[in-house]
Length: 103
Image: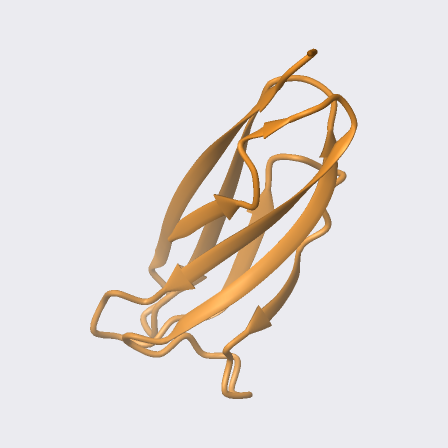
């Protein structure tokens, strides 16, 4: 999983666009994929890249996006959870730091 921001340094209240890439690096399909973001105001959309079966196949990668304004220095964390065919829960998370510049 990889979380990216379109900028790392912003002015107070500036809009930041986030991209979250979720890839199945394992060898078994994953279902019931749920992505959460630590910033409630960053409503996640997606995934793009799903072939329509709602299963994250091995080596398949999905893209989620969200955007929000940032007022203070922030570490934004995204977490993905999914289940394999046996019901075992797998998860991963990544973060990106945004620094608010006052000048």
